[in-house]
Image (cartoon, rainbow, N blue to C red; front, side):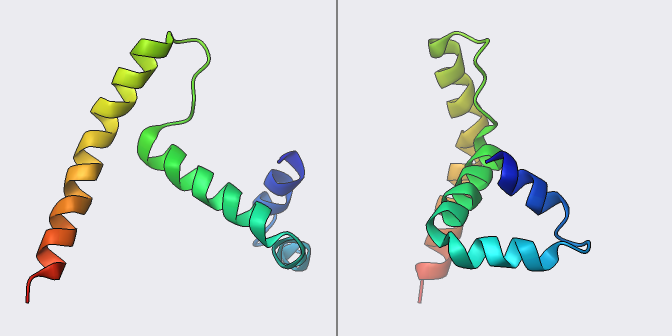
Length: 80
């Protein structure tokens, strides 16, 4: 993961070819990192200092508006 982060920070720089090479050679790992970053964006990164129940409740409170927004979008788009 550390190597991926180093490569991602230099994407716009001279190492862009190395980043593309990593994506080609490790597509599953790149996809996993991408999904994890999307989840962290919507739900926040995991925090090890909080209690488990507090963390579970906090994630539900933070992610509820996003889930409701996606449900509303889905309902809107599926109407003929």
